[in-house]
Image (cartoon, helix red, strand yellow):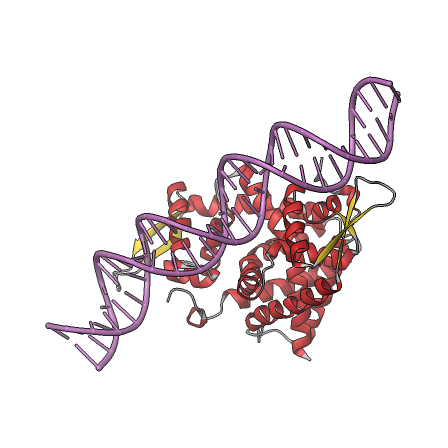
Length: 156
Length: 156
DNA sequence: TATAATGGTTACAAAAGTATAACTATTACT
DNA sequence: AGTAATAGTTATACTTTTGTAACCATTATA
């Protein structure tokens, strides 16, 4: 029975994807120099703290070369910094700068406004339903984003 | 107060986006010839029935030329058909074929399996929470997908 | 110490999405 | 009838994403 419910979640998440992606990519292109990929990297860094290049790739299921390109851009903009790992000199840790965190939050606020302008049309939903949905989504995200990185599969 | 709740939804939807997109695009590439864009077009057709090219663009907030390209591919595969509108000969209506509907459902099942394999890790959630979340997501989607097309903005 | 494995970069290629202008055909408007 | 607006296509250019192969540096292992 649980499987059926997860099915429904998966199906609905897929259907909402186009709306979601437009709401992210359009304002990004017009109002900043960050790509969606850059936003997702910063989102991971904000939620999980300092991460190595490989760990970022595992978080987002992206191949390592893509992470290198995205992070290079973010470094050019001053949003993240590289730090050598003192224990393993192969590892390069990435973390948000103050500027990165501030600008990230600001851009996300803009993105939320865009998405809100669409979600606001959902007048059929009750306030309590909106609250419950957001709480559940948050729980899902926290769970997903704290999955043990060792269980992921990129970076072979 | 409602605004704050919508904020939370927007924020969480954005964070879950990379997980979602990977779960869609990877199995599509390996197991079919349909692009994510094609899946979204078919999703719209399945939920809303026959749609004109412009209406599809409005549903997905995509410019018309992109719709033409996506629909052309779907026609080549035999998933959708063009039909002239008897009342307005400028309009070309698109609808799913039987093959399109069957294959679409089959592919979506595969996609759900991929996404499920990740969501299943969310053992922290109760069954009732999963059910509630899926119902709410469904309500949101139905609302979004039934927004009056006249309020959309593509195809000027 | 020799070999394998890991972390990261570079380079290249290809697929997909995005945007715009120009164009035809049809309909609506005055 | 003449003009504007709409529906759709074609063509083009660009950005982003995705994948892969080759490579170097470092660490782990046998």
